Amino acid sequence: MASDHGLRAGLRIVDEDADGVDRAFREDVLRGLAQRQKAVPSRWFYDEAGSRLFEDITALAAYYPTRAETEILARRGSEIAGLTGEGRAVVEFGSGSSAKTPHLLRAIAPAAYVPIDISGDFLRKSSAALAADFPGLAVFPVEADFTKPVELPGLVAGLPKLGFFPGSTIGNLVPPTAVDLLRSMRATLGDGSQLLIGLDLIKDPAMLVAAYDDAEGVTAAFNLNLLDRINRELDGDIPVAAFRHEARWNDSLSRIEMHLVAGSDVDFEVAGQPFAIRAGESIHTENSHKYEPRGSTMLLLAGGWTPLARWTDSQERFSVVLAEASEPRSAP
Image 1 (cartoon, rainbow, N blue to C red):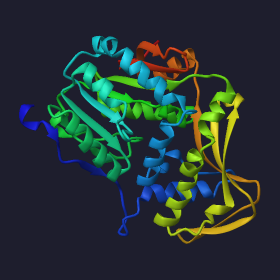
Image 2 (image 1 turned 180 degrees about the horizontal axis):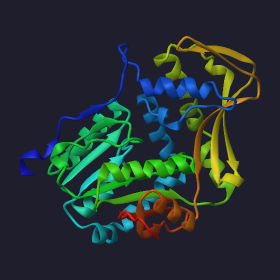
Image 3 (image 1 turned 90 degrees about the vertical axis):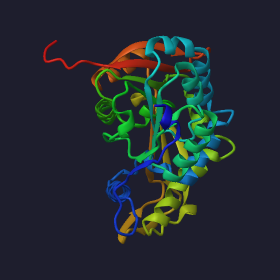
């Protein structure tokens, strides 16, 4: 691979119409706004502005997951390397700024790095920055929706894969969809692959709510930016000022929920279709499920992954699990 070191030409796998609108974005928004409990999938937070705001969130004092996971990766790198071995292609799903990735790359000496993200501009900037920090590493950015199987660059086809899914992003999905995503990752990475995944742990609800409703208002801006994106990209006229951010702990489902709550009755259009929301009703924009160890093990097994090792931070707030692709079984 010596001749392929450095940032490589990226792949772009996005289905757009003639006006450059992501068809999946439009379909998800129109379908979600037509439901009795209006909802938009959280993956659409991440346009360039949303990606920048999320990076601001990770630096907040109240937002513990990034610090906790970074601690695990920094302290346990040699243990992770011992179980993964060298020479793998690291495939990061939803790479964002790749802020935690250097800890992993330094520990395991991979043959290539493939960041996958739906925010193309942010992906290209962060990939260039990481390639500059790791001049001996082949970096192949892929702009794609990683919730579906992704065709990886041909130059990494013959390499063993290590999927990297940090940040407890799996917690954004309800269990059936989370299992579907894990199976999709299994299909993308192939036989013999491994997956290193972040899973947030159940803890004091007050700590959880504070992490998703910071006093500085950054998470509120992040949530409301979704409405700005809908207005800009889908020809919407949603009055953003009529909505406020709200974070709720749902104990029965072990998750934080984020909502955009209407302060008054609102009528609006998106992509030429009319919608209405009454005062006090909300648009449900994100779930963040929290796990206990047995529950996360069952989730991974259902998704086609067998856990090999689990690590937590010093305060036991967050976990990182290494799993391997399960062999297909036709019987118990």
